[in-house]
Image 1 (tube, rainbow, N blue to C red):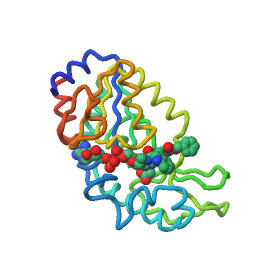
Image 2: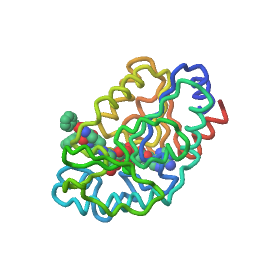
Image 3: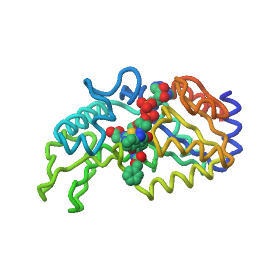
Length: 240
Ligand code: BV8
């Protein structure tokens, strides 16, 4: 199966890769759903929302600062690195990620489209326009309020918030133009991103799922490579 996917990629003009939390699992970054969920007794849907932040901004910041500490101590894995090398060795590769951990950039991916933002970026909750990119290796952020007095927030997309329209548009155009779409390490349940593989398939893309588990996308995929991304992506790279 890996060889068949490699043949499709070699023949493809445009390859799109969509990643989710599963590609960072082998770096020790917990996934959102399923075993080893993210934090204490909370569910991501309880914390990654504007309502949760309005109710208790300190708690939500505590969660993000905990995740930042975990991610700063993590290293990109062979799955991240194989994707970075794939885009470096040939044209026409677009990387879309739902992850906010920044590990694709640290692995060398030049311009991943971060559909749900990046937890190292902050922005002011008022319209004063303040925004900043914190240094991943730097000291934990202690300044949680803007100079204008309003709360700062992680520049990520919470549940119930719209994705940046330009970003979503670029991702949709890429998915619809894809000859091959690799869907890696996502439970394929979070919309609107979960609609992208179906949009790609309706056009002409070969859809390949790389995941350790079954997902709602599995039955729609042309090929399912069942296993860890940190092994399957390097295996795919070797077969190219
Ligand atoms: C929107 C950023 C509309 C923050 C995230 C009710 C109320 C409100 C909204 C909704 C609702 N019902 C439905 C919705 C829509 C909602 C949604 O889809 N909810 C789901 C849960 C049903 N979507 C939204 O709210 C979106 N916005 O709809 O706005 C709108 C429009 C206009 C105006 C106003 C509003 C926003 C969604 C974005 C939310 N933000 N993250 C943060 O990270 O802190 S989502 C979060 O889930 C992460 O980004 C994550 O990446 C994403 C998807 O999860 P996955 O990446 O798939 O991770 P998961 O753990 O689920 O799965 C991991 C997979 O990896 C598993 O399959 C596992 O088997 C696999 N795996 C594990 N190890 C490995 C592996 N695979 C390979 N190798 C391994 N080693």
